[in-house]
Picture 1 (tube, one colour):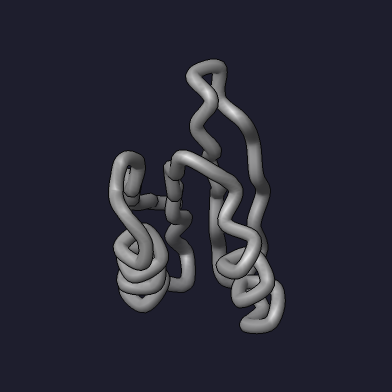
Picture 2 (tube, one colour):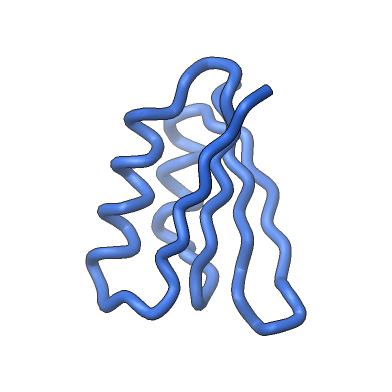
Length: 72
C-alpha cells in the first residue's frame, strides 16, 4: 500500500477542505491518504461516510488531527 500526505494545518477555510478533496480525487484504489488538520473536520467526515470511504481519526500530541482515509 502506498500513501500520500496532505498537511493542511494553518490554512484558512475553505482551503483545508479543498486540499482534502483534491487529495481524495487523486487517491488510487490501494492508496491511503493521511490528512493533517488543526481541528476535526466534521463536514468532511460526513462526506467520507456518504461516499463510502473508510477513515480513522486520531489526535496528535501537538493538538493536530490525523485522519487516515482509504477507499472501500
